[in-house]
Amino acid sequence: MNATATALHITLDWHDWLNLFGHYLLLSLMSLGGAISTTSEMHRFLVEQHGWLTQAQFNESIALAQAAPGPNVLFVALMGWKVGMNAGSVAAAFLGVATTMFGILLPSTIFTYQVAQWGHRNRHLRGVRAFKQGMAPVVIALLLSTAWILASSTGGEGVHWPLWLLALASCLLVWRTRLHLLWLLGAGALLGAFGIV
Image: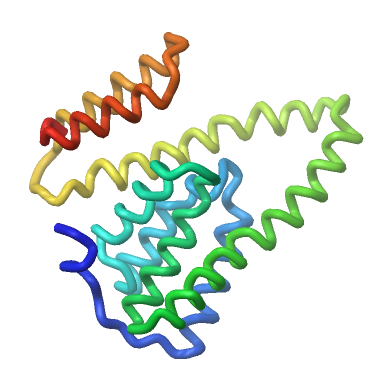
């Protein structure tokens, strides 16, 4: 089902826009592995709690931004755009983009800049080294939660085993070989185009 067929018609007042901005400000502070690591919370907020996006619109935003060249944070802009378009106008769509992008980028940019300077000055400290090593499992868990939401929402009932097998095979190939990631993305796109996954 395409995004046009699943478009919503919602009404947002200034409290809703402020709520959206505030939520993305908080998500920015949680996005230790990048904005993509907070997509499970974005899904809960936008799709489940408020119904501002459909499941298809949510998935399409992530898939399109990940496939396009440039920073992967662009999926946040696409989500804001779709929330605004669901509210009924192109002006609201631009407001949605600005709201979500400033919300996700502002705190994390300032915080990251300050912490990076401090961490660089104190890189020899045992606590700084331990923190960096300890954050790796947290980031991996956040990314796995994103993968779970995207893979478990295929639209059908039950588990979509070919998709999970493809994901597992891709993980193993990335881990064990020097095969460039773009080849795996291309193979996944072909398998999806032919309806295999």
